[in-house]
Image 1 (cartoon, helix red, strand yellow):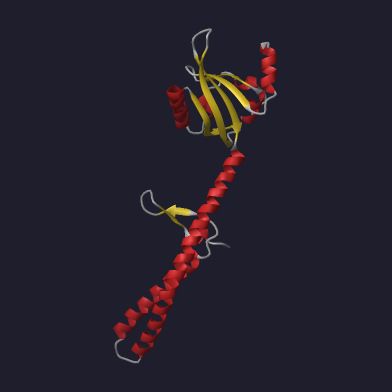
Image 2 (cartoon, rainbow, N blue to C red):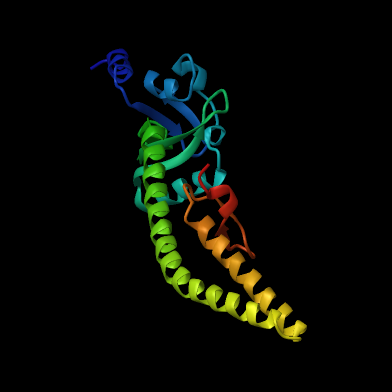
Length: 218
């Protein structure tokens, strides 16, 4: 098969196919589908581009390069990439190192595909599963807390009525404080039961906690 026919064949593929110079870190060749993935009008527009220009996180390039040098091939490697308009998408690729017999240089050949839709679906599924786990904990907490809390509030109301008929004003204030704090706990548990999405906020250091106000349903 002649080189022209081979290029035509690659251009008919739905997946992107590319070849990069590992030493110079530039794109040597890419098919039409590959150029389309990155938003370019023609493959020629990408020839000579630095590979890193298409990476959102340069650490991904280091990870890919290290894995290739170690194993010679990397399958289903997913990175955050960017198009010509700087929009972000998920790029999945299978890459392999080959030696150019003509000049002895090391090339990377890859088959690439835009998997943004799949990653978004995975994220939604994980988020839904996570939310369901949170809601199960909330239902358990609400049940286990509300039962004794109802008894505490009932007894505090009786004690407050008794103290009002006595001269122990300081004791009455203490009981009122306990009663108010118990009501606050009840409100927190109630807000937990209205969670419809899991929105986090910083708690301490690298730790996170659920923002009840932003996470509750409208």
